[in-house]
Length: 357
Image 1 (cartoon, rainbow, N blue to C red):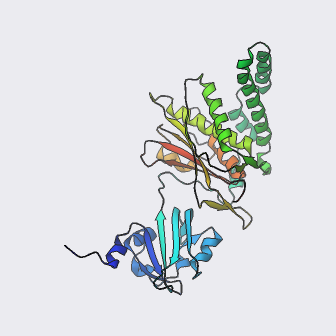
Image 2 (spheres, rainbow, N blue to C red):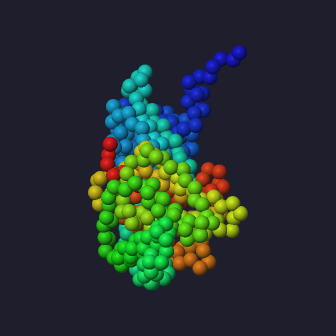
């Protein structure tokens, strides 16, 4: 029987990027995965100050790099390597119990099959879509006529069918509110935030989409029932969900077995900095709209949230631009990605919770 592998062999074989830093916060040792992650050889990394190599948006993580007593674990955080964005990682830094003069850093990159679309400085100024364009995209028929027809139907149908006319009138009122919002896009109007149960909004959006398809479509779900309430503008989030679900229906309309589902989950660690302040907002609640359509062509992936970029022959390219605008107004984020199996694509919404426990 051969002997056990040495500590050196184990360190070199571990799948995460590992760095050992000394009491002066300088890199003393790295494993091969770290060399690959940083794109530098051990010769160039060793001796450099850790903060020269790793940068974070979260001030707490920045401080942890040079705090000898800090033992920190962070999940799904954005990292920058010498000015180059390197996506999302799980990050750990802690002292070595056997000798607390040394600390070990562990970095586990997360899959990034699709691009992360984050708000950049000046992004608000770049959103220059004219309100009439968006209104033409969102409103297909005169709202007054639709609401009037629903009110007439109310008088002539059975009580058990009136839930449909009530839904029509509710949707008309929601779109009217959207009209007010779109007319003031250029004014940076603050979102009307309040605590909301995301599952009730998802059910409303799903019912709206399924009813429009005469019951021929069923949208699945995979909910985390323990999710806390989120702090959002309910009308804006309803519009986002409706847009994403409608896109999923279009993407799967030619499939024999379309698979559209909405997933909710709680993810520890995701956060963002609020533009113009030092405040950090945690985004632990995720809503995922997933479908088994062909997805976005690779050449368009990085631009799908830009105005006038569309994968549809007759599309105006305003739906996802509107999604990004509305989610950013609520201090949230949106990401497009391909699932690990590459058989599904999905949009992930990252939302703040209403209260910090």
